[in-house]
Picture 1: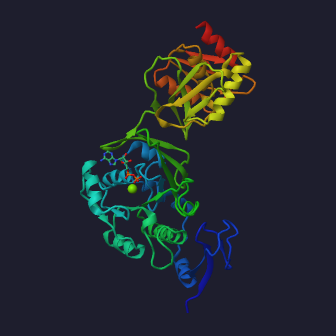
Picture 2 (picture 1 turned 120 degrees about the vertical axis):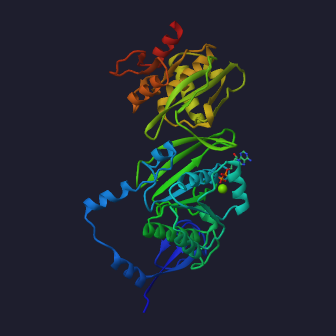
Picture 3 (picture 1 turned 90 degrees about the vertical axis):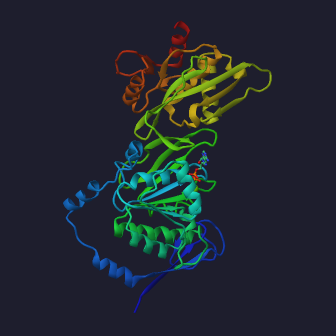
Length: 440
Ligand SMILES: Nc1ncnc2c1ncn2[C@@H]1O[C@H](COP(=O)(O)OP(=O)(O)O)[C@@H](O)[C@H]1O
Ligand SMILES: [Mg+2]
């Protein structure tokens, strides 16, 4: 006799309950409870097969089997390549470049064996066209538009590829449960089946997922806990920079990023994290932004316009405008400068976003540089600015300094610290910075 366990899942948010519910207690939607039956007898049978392993042996399994993506930055991002049986979720807004990356990755991994590309979004012909445009070597890459997970996984078993891509997971469905493809119940079931397949077979898989307006993969955070690794692809429509960011990784660090440039020939890896254009115009300064485990040099640009009678405007791109309002107030108060009546516009290079407080000093300097209409010189500014006008210490200062020096910057302004090396200028307050600018 098969023994079945029944529970209910909200088709809107993924809430689970052993009892049926009319209104979901989490998302407050009505009539979203879907019944799910799990075959307990199967589960028991599976459990009997599970082996007991010495931890010492277990610890040797994974690292030996990492597949290199042959993209240096991507390998670093993944903690050294792809692990056997790893399930990776790649999320991002439509058009950011997920399918492009997946196809380029297919080419690289096809040097180890066949790669299967499951396309639920685009026709085989469309993928063919893209592969021509990207000049992808097509040997060893197989494409299918089959989208029922049961028969798909049978196909995968038959082909025995080294890597499988599901583009996108929202277009794949399972005929063992109800619900439309892309719905919570379907996605959950499909991802769970893929996960079990990857773990059993050791074949790593990449699941592509669109994110909705809130930035969540449809079915809030629903699949993120099922997979091993969650990566988001970010990028502004107005620039060609694309950033891959690891949100979770069972096989490596999280928070790490890799930067690509979107060209008509495809995505190109950017290895040196320097997003600074040569400029000696007032308002341009260089900041050190820390992302993951690495510093990135970026350019902050300000335009401070002349006095206005009307209320002064603060507009920023790539920085929370509240940061600009606060820094302007600190400058006004502690340097006694009439900036309250000036319009301030601030921009960050390359469509990057700054949340790192260590960029405060650079932002403040950029505003001052534009206000005085003076280029401050080739230098990197590192430090957090307090409301009291102090310049505060920041994490990873040594790495930031090394990075700036490696990029050829001889002058680096930092918060007061016991670091001593050539070209380092230490300041305690914004007033010190002001004096430095004035006398230099
Ligand atoms: N013919 C083309 N020439 C240059 N770039 C293109 C072309 N077609 C698409 N792209 C670029 O590829 C992007 C779409 O990438 P794609 O991998 O399909 O995104 P996603 O799968 O995330 O929706 C477009 O936004 C555009 O930047
Ligand atoms: Mg796509």
